[in-house]
Length: 77
Image (cartoon, rainbow, N blue to C red):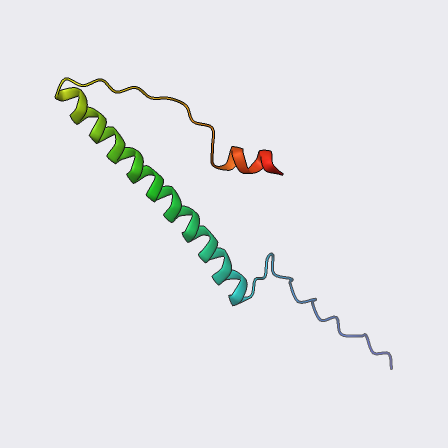
């Protein structure tokens, strides 16, 4: 009598596996980035509103490009 070995299918490997801690860290980083972006957008909106008010009162508004922030930090390295 011959017995055939039973072939059990290999368990399918999940595509990506993350721990809960990794997910929380990624959400924290994403939230911080989006919070910073929202802060900068609000700051730009307030600046535009002030510039419009100054122009409406007869003043002149001039914009100048300022090199700073990440560019300055990158140059230090």
